Length: 303
Image (cartoon, rainbow, N blue to C red):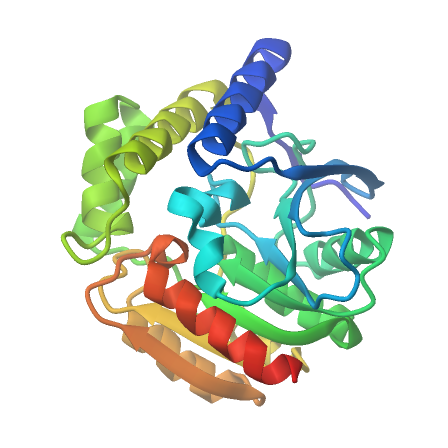
């Protein structure tokens, strides 16, 4: 596999320790300890967090996060408990994002992220699993569904970044670029309020929101991000031979929901269901009812 780019922390030792301290704070807030796996992949070291992973009697759920996030965001306010169904949960720290995995990345338009995802699952001993991806993670789910569909029992796409180009609306560009040019807490909060959440319906607890703000300020200011961003996979989506479920927030500023739905219906031959959540922003993985829906569908399919 050819490495397209490499992202990195500006002070690797210090910054990785800061990230580990942040994880410890989340564990303290949630009252649980995440299992950890570190494997060697074609992209270098890949880190995985886990819950209940030793109980092989349970079905597996593999989670891929969005750009400039960690999959642990899915568990703010113990969000994964909202699945209401026992699962072996593997939260993959995608290479090239600000986390404990190495920063090597393939060309985003190749199928290499799919081959990498397949390698991760195979090294973890997962013969097949439900996979879920938010934004950037949705693209990885589709790449995996193209190269190794037998590994995927069903794919859940949460406001995915592969069903249309990134919105070029003035509001979206403004609120996304604001914290990048000036990564202050106030600017990050403006971005979160306008693009990620849709308050008062879609919001986190005060403590969890502060943790997200702290992570975003850290990720933007301490990580040299050279990773390519998601793109519209267009006709390539038809090659994904996996049952797919689309979860959309109708207040997604980054990828407006109706265009994503239209393109999913156009290209995904095995699209099983579309669920739209009212007054929900781009960060749908932090919305409790979306996790309820995900758990209900997995429970029905696991029978």
